[in-house]
Image (tube, rainbow, N blue to C red; front, side):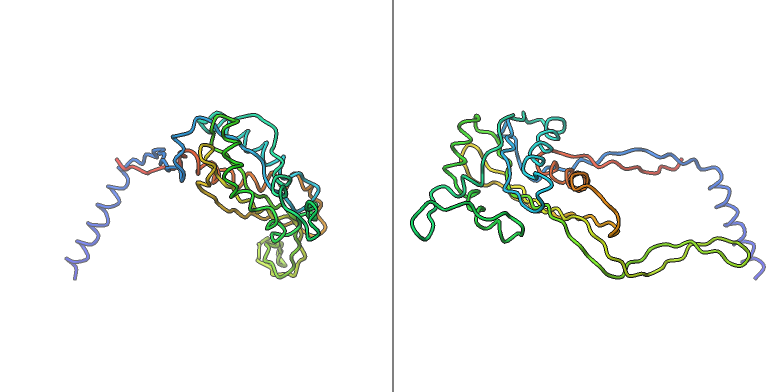
Length: 252
């Protein structure tokens, strides 16, 4: 028993000595992530505009177009085309007649996802997108739908609360309380169209939401940009290689 204890103590001592003599080095590394879409055949990209709905406090069509163009200028090798936003809602209604044979009137404001159905056929209009491609030297075309709408939610949420005991000692305890919250939800669908053929190459849906206390006032535009900031990296990873940064620990 004594011999076994001695061997154990020797092993522990050896580990301690080894650890004391070991140096730790933190090495930064970057891991490349391949893009979801091969855009090597394109030199230009045209963010054409979006069918947008939800709150009227933010022009989601115009703001999304501006933001994506700005991001692509700095984080993509494609040349960004500056041009007017396409009137996609009008294009979607062209050639459609109402029940009395007259030209179909514009649909009501888009408030729900189901309201988009009257317009979504425009993305399958191969001839239209092929004409747009010919006009802008056959770029990769980015379009789609954007829903940015207010939302309200109530229920039980958990939050940290500071409490003090009789001796004045502070501690933090989780507390479950019923709260009413309000905020916004952003649901974009990005569609990538080949400007040479007018056909859809890829589409991707995203969803982000943000909630505040019911008594907190937050401008719709600032909430929109906060939500877009969350999904911009995913959008960019569709078109160009991204690098995930991290670290490794080396022992010496």
